[in-house]
Each structure stands twice: as structure tokens, then as C-alpha cells.
Amino acid sequence: MATAGTIRHIAAAPEPRPHRIEPVAGVPLIFELSSDGRRGADGPPRPDGIARGADILGRELCREDLPGFPELSEPQVLRHFLRLSQLNFAQALQFYPLGSCTMKYNPVLNEEMAALPGFAALHPATPEHLAQGALELMERMEAALAEITGMDAVSLAPAAGAQGELTGLLMIRAFHRKRGEHRHKVIIPDTAHGTNPASCTLAGFQVIVAKSNNRGFLEAAEIRRLASDDVAAMMVTNPNTLGIFEPEIREIATTLHEKGALLYLDGANMNALLGVAKPGDMGADIVQLNLHKTFSTPHGGGGPGAGPIGVKRHLEPLLPMPRLARTGDGLRFETNRPDSIGRLRSYHGNFGMLVRAYAYILALGGDGLAQASRLAILGAKYLRKRLEEKFPSATGEPSMHECVLTHDLEKRADVSTLEIAKRLLDFGIHPPTIYFPLVVPGALMIEPTETESREILDSFVTAMEKIYDEALNDPELVKGAPYSTVVSRVDEAEAARHPILRWQPKEK
Ligand SMILES: *Cc1c(COP(=O)(O)O)cnc(C)c1O
Image (cartoon, rainbow, N blue to C red; front, side, top):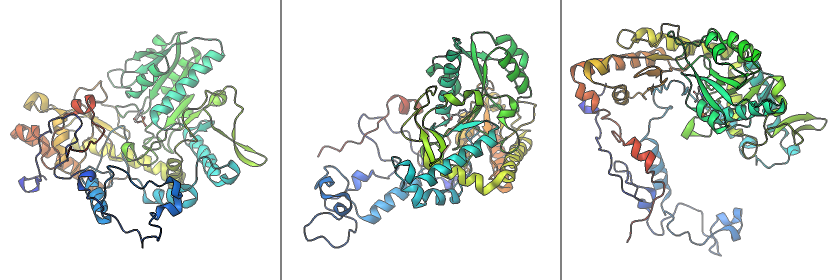
């Protein structure tokens, strides 16, 4: 628990100043550590005085001088970046129960596999006949994801969940156009992730909102009411963002199909379904997967994502380029695909992520993946049950891999969900997702994942209970949190409106 003794620093939000980045809590910028002529070890100097790197790069590519480039000794560089890495919360150090986002442990084995020189040093423009091993990994990965999702074909090209959504929607548009239909609406439930309506708008569709019922799920009757000849598709997340399974999903799929519309299943978070249930069996025509969530690859700022999409056979010709095909001489990227929606990005997807996720799938195997889902569900149910007295569930339906909780502290003590979340930082716990889904006022959305131990879950319960009591007895304590982080409260709106992205030297 955070006591005065553990409080390291309390910093007010720095005054925003144009073109200057203030050093955070005494850690200077690398430019400010620079000292003219300082160097790391580089072996004995060459007789011609040319830097050693020139041997590898070629002399013509090396500059004699790079004005303003920081000059430091090797230990200075090491210490600088290690210190920076400690200013942040990290999944490798702390519990990170971020609902919907699935921040799970990234196995070290994945990293080792991705670092194998045959993978890590492979240039994306390597001719196909010299990259057959990598292409085979992609082929096997497509097959594994098709099996997991119950779909007929998979593309590994999209670089994130949201790009997978956009890919799916562009395919939906192309599918209807090809049949001579101009459907311009997409149904999205009121519990949807924000990227769903954003992707629809980007793809030129108009969004119609489907209301979930007071138990938190969608009724087929609501979809029957909304489905018309204008509707191209419905996008749905299952389990939905309240963490509950959509019990009428198959009836919803049938209703849509009868009306000529498609079902897009947002499979960003498959942590309840792996090895247990398949979107293909639920009637989905398209599903995307976030490898950086369910498949244990690093997330967000920690690394590039990957959002493969799977489709049923009738949509396969529309899949984006490049498309892998097995020919008489091995694996090739097909170039003649007249119905394809085209390319989404450079090269073949984020290959390093595919290697990591494939390693995860092989390491666990089919039974292991199912066990992971069951443990993820067990963890969420456990937290919900242990916390229900002070933080009741937003729904009476059984929770799957995440639970959405509420509280009465706003009313009783004028303490908001944001303030509870900030206070958790003082207990060494990353805050859960808050104020989402939007249908639950003041929501706390908690996803423990399968990788956390009972002890960690118990310490989270203890922290939440303590914060509840603090809010009632000493609300100002909670409202001023966090006290133990390098920076306390930051001005989030200012950071978004006036980002300062470039360092400029002080005038001498
Ligand atoms: C995370 C998430 C997305 C978006 O995925 P990104 O990789 O962040 O673009 C979409 N839908 C749901 C349900 C998600 O949880």
C-alpha cells in the first residue's frame, strides 16, 4: 500500500511552452547530456581516420559531421535509456488489467523466435524463392487462424485491429457493388468499440445504432427491426464489451443473411473464445483478430500490431494483396487477383508479430489455447465475485474474459472513476479501462487475462477495497492521486491539442 514513505515525487503538470520539451522529473533529454567529442568505444582508430561504420556501410554513406547529434559515452547511453524505461508502467513489471485491450504477458519464447536471424534479418523485398521458410510460416499461420476462427481463408496483411475492420468493410462494399447493390448502412450496437463506427465512416458507410436490452445483450428482434435493403452489414463484438456472450448471435446472423447483409465479427479480443467457440460457427462472414491482444504479441506503443482477417469462402477473392498461393515451385504472392480490394500497406504485414503469435499458438497447442480462455474467464469471474459488494457488476449476466463494474462513490463521496483509476497507480497497478462501454456510467472494465496468479488478483481486490474506504473517509487523498508516479496528473487535453513533437536546442 502507498504510504507517505513510498511517495517519491509529486509534480504539478508542467506549463505547456511551445517548442520546448521539459525534462521529466530530473531526467534530462539525451541532447542535454551531450558533450562535444564524447564517444563510445569503437576499437582502435583506422589509419585513414574514417569511422569504423564505414567498413560496413560504405564510405560514401557516412557523414563526417551531424550537427546537433548528441555525443555521449556508452554507459551514458545505456543509463539514459534504462532510466527512461523505468519512468513508465510496464506490463513486464506490473499488473495491467486493461479491459478490452488484453494486456497479457508476452512470452520470452516469442521474442527468441522472432529474433532468429533467418526471420529477423530477412529483408521484406527478398525474392520469394529465397524466403520459402518465412512464407511457409505465413501459410501455416493462416491455416492456424482459419482453424481457430472457423473461417475458410485468412489474410495476414492488416497492421492493426482497426485496419482489419477497414479491410473488412471495404470488402463488404466491394461484395455488394459486385452484385449491383448499393447498400450504404452498417448496424453497430451501442456497446461497440469506438473504432467500429470510425472504420464505417472511413469506408463511406452510415452507422445505425442497435440498442442492447437492459440485460446488456442484443436481441434478434432489434436487428430484424433495423435490417433493410440499405443495410450492408452489421459489426458486432462477441463477447460484447460488457464482457457477456451474445446469446442470440446465430439468430442475428440468420436475420442479416436473409436480408442480404453480412455479419462482421470484431474479434479483437478472442480471449474468451480461443479453442472454445468459433466466430465461423456463429454465422460470421468476416472476423478480424488482434495478435497484439489475444496472441500475446507486444501492444500499442510497445511494438507494431497485427490485425489479420478471416473470411468465408464467398469473400475470399476480395481479400487484400499480397495473397499467398502455393504453386508447383513453392509459395508465391499472387499478382493476378482482379476482385481484390488491393493493397493496404507496404509489404506483407508485420512479419515479426506473425512469428511471435505463431510461436504462442504452437507453444500452447489446441488444448493449451482452450485452457488459456478458461483461465481468463475464471480470473474475470473471480474478480467480479470478490469485488461485488463495493463494486457491483454492471450486468447480471455471466462475465466471460472481462467484467464491467460500477460504484456509488461519485454519489457518496464525489470521487470519480478517473480518480479511483489514478489512485490504483499508487498501489503499483495499472488502471483498468474506464468510462467504457459508454452504456455504463462510470464504468470500470477489468480484464485480468489468463496469465495472472491468484495472489496478484487478490492484491488487486485489496487495493480496490482500500481505495473504496479511503474515498469515504478521506476523499481528498483519492482525488489528489497518484503520488508515487514520476508525474502526477497530466493535462490530457493539452497533450492532444498541442503536441510538442520536436526538440529544439536552447539558444546559446
Ligand atoms: C482494441 C480493439 C479494437 C481496435 O484494435 P487496434 O489494434 O487498437 O486498432 C477494435 N475492437 C475492439 C473490440 C477492441 O478491443
